Length: 66
Image (cartoon, rainbow, N blue to C red; front, side, top):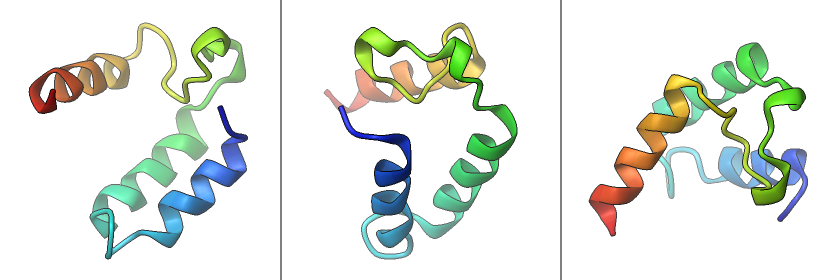
């Protein structure tokens, strides 16, 4: 697990190179408007709030790429 700000910096640093710049921009908007620490799955150190549409989307993508 790593702190939120460190992971955010890594993602932002890779925008346009390692990560799609538009997706990074959407991630930052989502993080600023939707992140609620009370919903954080602390045991998994996840940035994805439990029972939110983003959680289902991430799970679907992870299933497809594995």
